[in-house]
Amino acid sequence: MLRKRLVMIMSLIVMIFVGPALASASTYTVQKGDTFYSIGQKFGVSMTSLKQANHRTSDMLYAGETITIPQSTITQEEKELLASLVHAEAKGEPYAGKVAVATVVLNRVDHRDFPNTIRDVIFEVAGGAYAFTPVQNGTIYGGYTEEDMRAVNEAIAFRGQGNGSLYFYNPKTSTSQWIFSREVVTTIGNHRFAK
Image (cartoon, rainbow, N blue to C red; front, side, top):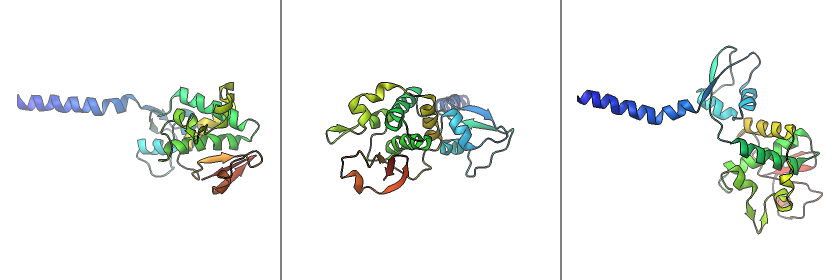
């Protein structure tokens, strides 16, 4: 009787803790030419989380193998909001600049000095003003293009792999002296990206 209860309790524990993890993950059969990066883009998850879910430290994948795709921690609503910000901030900029704008938001989400959700980062008020001009002037509500969403998915796939930019600005239009004091890590199009 004691053994039967112990088995039931252990089964219940497994269902409570392991069940949700299994239910939230799916699988994918690797195709020739696939990389963790391309798979991450396809499913909207980071390369890091793909590697962790599959207990990998290298980039090696084999065509035909089945890997686990973890559930994205970013909702479709958050992706759409981020794509709208990318559209408003980087319209007319090169594609790499759009990816970099999305990356700045994701870096802020992951950084201890900023809010920990995409929505809260985008709508953050600092020093009495919104952190992003398109929120202040309403252009964030102008929609997004397929390219903007592709840039968001690329930024998500690349999450945690970049140079850690937390800010971006156009030196021709910026009026903040503080932003010019930040270490610039790259320039893409009209934007400088900084730490």
